[in-house]
Length: 442
Image (tube, rainbow, N blue to C red; front, side):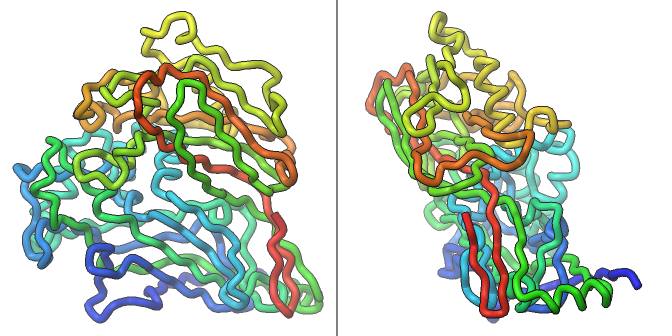
């Protein structure tokens, strides 16, 4: 006898009486429970579905119009509302994976792994993303042609994390698995999702987004009787999965150094993206933009040199990355070494079949101090990022358990302009399951 699959649709366990969720109205958490059961869940089938609406007023009765100038990040679409994603064992409460700044992680992930055809095609239908900022504004925020003329935009997005990107089915059993899953989503503040396209915050004072009819859908698989019998007879079971861990730090120096104690034993790669700290939670700036290092007047702070270290030693590159801007700072083309290492850190360079990281958006954008250019660039806006891969072949990773991760930058940062750096580290982890509970080994 072979295994068979079933489809599940789960409503949030903390749903409100009207079925609506929003950060603005004091409901910033969405929680789903998949109880322990003797079956597997197929990770690639997990989707968050629902309806997305933007309202202009506190009473959620007035839809925005084009003249209001309300925008959201077109590269992310509805992905911008997921600020934190945490996956627990439902039985023991053990955290299996937690990603802060999930929306910023998605900006890098989507840029590297999806093409412009994806961007302008099916992801507009599923994720409300579109490479043209004006089309995204008219089609999502001021969408008067939506269902019931209530501005509702249906969406269906994967919940991207290391655990759910794996190929191996996740065991939900309480004896030979993780003991079920509790999935929690923290919604992002409205001030970091919506922003003014003309630097005027008047129309955004009460503007907010709202989710309704939210569900989680997935596919589970029941093992055949012989396999189930074998699993039930085991006293311990191990499950290996990938995990993404997030870190945050600010820099404000021409010679900047980042150091993090990762405490991870199998690191596969690390990548980061950047935005001026003053843009975060600002109604007049796009706080989710992935911009190059930038001075306060909008001029670019080009990267002249980058050095990745492990325990203070250059690693995995045994040399400094000297860019073309070290000799010609006026060159707006990103150095090819930075581009390749960035793509390679998100997904192995040889495995990338399509990508929207290209010379049009992975470059240095010269902007004025109001940063209007950052909001109205083509091809989805700036796709800047930096990173380094440690292991794309054996998939065993490099240990940072007792040594710090570091990176040193030499920048043309010539003004008082703190830069927020969001770092995401990709590693392998193992869950040891026993009837008494689970242990996560990092």
